[in-house]
Image (cartoon, rainbow, N blue to C red):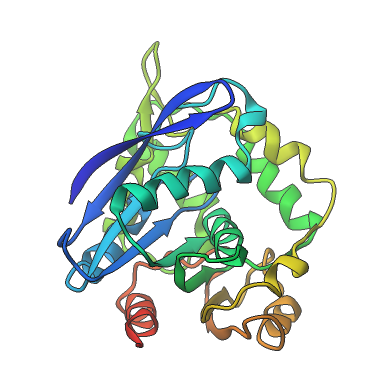
Length: 281
């Protein structure tokens, strides 16, 4: 794994987008894996390691998360900005086509990228997200994102993550410890904070009072789509997932038992599912 940065532009100036890179830079296929709302690139370490035998894999920290720069105002955290940043990343990688794996927010970015004319997205994996999201799910997310907990130790942070992200499904103790290690940043006065800009919560809370409806966007996607859904998900309903198999790109739906929003994509079975789908010619 290498750690790299690419310079991007926002309405208020420049910012650096950090990304981890895996595999051979001369590989004939490139995969981009994009995390959820307040997560970061390291969520994809196991998947990226598995894909790196055949793919060049880039896992970005979206602006305001992980090791990427924070933006100056909350309103700058928006999907057009994220899509612009990802376009810069694709240009940096020199890839004509990319395979896209997106969890939650990362999936929405992928949908937007795939729906545009002449899109570089060759295949799209959506992890527990679709074109319709009920406001009840958005409000639940806004509630925990709006919290600004401070921890005195790494075990305390791990305990918090185990509670908040229980819907990720069955994870090993090693998974949880690793997640705690890369989800932390040092507080200026000591202690541990979550590794994202608290301003991100402002947009999440402001947009939580109405449903998200992107069906018109979904119908423009032409590439093959694998849709992964946690059977206990409150963000991607069963009805929405089934409708996604009937219209637009007609996604292939696979459900993950004992998981909600969103499956962690860390188990051997989940990794094999994605690798096999992306590996199809």
